[in-house]
Structure formats: structure tokens, C-alpha cells
Length: 495
Image 1: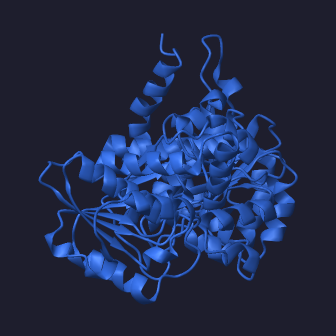
Image 2 (image 1 turned 30 degrees about the vertical axis):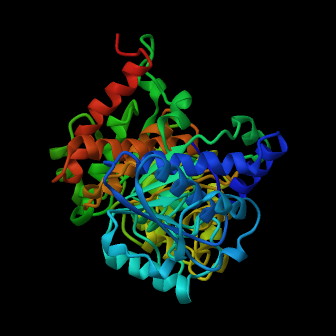
């Protein structure tokens, strides 16, 4: 699950070398791993290897040598002068017995596959000049590309394109994935990512303190609430979902249904008078109470059994929504949509409210994020989505779910996770409301906020895959059932 930044990966390499594994041995294994993937193609395959001036190029020299030894026809092009190579890369270039031609002169049109070994995850500048022209020519050739470590031109830390970037069909990286493999647009450019074992011992992770993870069940499974045979609904919490007026009440219903499906023992929707009939007509297992004003919400919350509150979906933007949220200070909170926009430019005020409770999850999309943190350069300016989410979590004291195809979940304590299971068809109206409801259902069951947010995002994506193309938000709630069943079966909880 660990994700390493390029700098942390350099540290892992250094620790492995300090432990007795030579840099040459690591490079030999890395290049061989690339060759192994390329060699899945038939022997007649013509392979072009484009090598850069650093260690990524050294991996390319190894791959070219191994593939030649296996009978493949290989053309190797080098960006820069062979005399400029240093260290392990220079040593691997000396072991290559074939011709080295300038990279720009490689006949890409005659190649069946191109290995991109120009620049790896450590790229720290925009590509320009000859390098940029070479990448543009490679993309224009429309050949299957196998990237070494990361497609050239993708920033390994942020996933951003540095000027221009290779579009790869597959990427072979080493030891652990990098943020650039998962964050957009790097995820698109990377294609299928394979992680190769090159002999770096797992023990080095203890000295690196990796705090970024792939959002997979292993990350949160131990904290996931499983119903007990001797339990009852009151032990699984009572969530209150705050609805807006009639015109936007569907968002709250989606959230409430998802909240109940996610395992909350009881769910109540509080709404203005005009929305009462439509909620009552459409909700069976969910209770409906009058809650159009902050005072009514406050009276409902005099019942201490309401331990979690979801506010935002269809709630309306303005002072009334802020007042309702303030009534819930001290409860476990899911703050989304209109509730976030009601604090536009005032994240410190939201942070003061969050500080009164023990758990809060904020679920903005990019637009809501920009509005909430307007004027906060330290939050909205970093190029990395990871850095933006972490800065927002530190400022507000809540767990941030910065939504998208590459959703990032960040905790105030510095932990973060990147989602990788959301299908394209999840981008549909109301899907975010369902996510808020899942978060609320897990918080109601006393799941820790970071783990609850990570679980909710993963469940959301898994349900979308279960429902399949053409889904609408209502389908997500029903599709949670088989996803939950599989989780329960893995835990032996379906007997």
C-alpha cells in the first residue's frame, strides 16, 4: 500500500546500498524487469530503446542488452553524449555491445515497441529543447510505449506534465509506486503500472516513514465495523442528515439511504416543512423530522443518541446552513457541498467548529475546495493534489476528501491515501451525495475519521464497478450490498 515520493525512493535505494546491495545490482535487476515485460511480445518484435543521461537511461541500457541476448532486434538511442554518462549508468553503457545512435535519429516508424528510459520519477524541471521534441515525436509515432519507472515528462511527486510527457501503454516501476502513477494526469500517461521487486528489503520502509498509501481495504479493514450477533441498532449509531428545501431534497435522500446502507443503526432526515411530504413518501426505513431552522436542529440534537450529522447535500448556501452546522458542534460531522460553500473564504471559522468535536470529514470537489480556501495560497497553490489536501487538513483539523478520479484523502496528522478504483462512469449527478452518506454511516458506527473516509471512498468506487456502465447515483446505494457482503465474508461475518 505504501507510496513513495521520488526523494523517498532515493532514500530506499541508498539504504539498500548501505545494507550491502550495490547500485549496479539494483540497476541490473531494474533493467531486467523492464526486459521481462517487453519480452512478453513475440521474438520478431522490433524494439527501440530511448535512453536518457541519468540512471533511468542506465536501466534502458540493461534492458537493451538483455533483450538482445534473448534474440530481439533492438535499436538504442541516447539523448546526449555517451561521454556525459556517469556512475552506474556509464558502467551499464560500457556493457552494451551494440550501436549507440542519437535518440533523435532512431527510426520510430519501424519499431513495434518503444522503451522510454529517458527520464524517471526524479524529473524536477519542464522538458524543453531536444528532450521535448523527442517526446513529442514519440507520441506522434503512436507506438506502444513501455515506460521505465515513470513516463518521461511526468512529475513523480505531483503527477503533473512537465512541459510535455510520454503517453505509455505500460510502466514498470521499482519497489513501490510513486504519487505520479496515481494522480492525474500521470495516471493516464502511465497506463498499466507493474511494480518490480529489485531486491530492496522491506525493512527500509521503517527508516523512511512513508505516510502516503494506496486506498485499499488493507489500509482500513481492521477498523471497519462488523455487526455482532449480539449487537443491536442503537450500538451502530444514529445519523442525522440535514435536508434543504423541496427543490433540492433529492440530494439529502441519496445521502440518507447511503448512510443507512453503510451500516448506521438509524438515520433521520431533518428538513423544512415543504420537503416533509416528499421525504416521507420516498423513505421507508429512514425517519423524517421537521428541521428547517437552526433552532429545530438544536432541539433534535438534544437527544444525545444522534452521534453523527451529514450536512451539505442540497442544504442551501448561507447563514442558515452555517447556523445548523454550529448546532452540531461536538458531534461527528460530514461536511459537504452547500455547507462547505457557506464557509467560502473562511476555513478558520470552520476549523473552530471542527475543533469542538472528535471527528469531521470534509468532502469537497475542486470547485468547492477553491471556494472554501479562497485566498489561502498555502492550500490552493501547491501543484500536487496531495500537498493541497494535506494543507487543507492541517488548516481545518478535519479529514479532507478532495474528490475526483484520483480522490485524495488526507488527515491532519499527515497521513494520506490516493484512490485508484473509481471507474469513469462514477462521474454522475448525485454520486457525491452518496459518498457523503457512506462517510456518515461509518462515522455513526464510531469508525476513526481517516479510516472511515478511506473506506467510504473505496466502497464508493467498488459500488460503481459493481453497478457497471450507465449507473445513476441511486444505483450506487443498491450496489453497496454485494460489496459489503464480500467484505463480511472475508471477515467471516456472514454465518
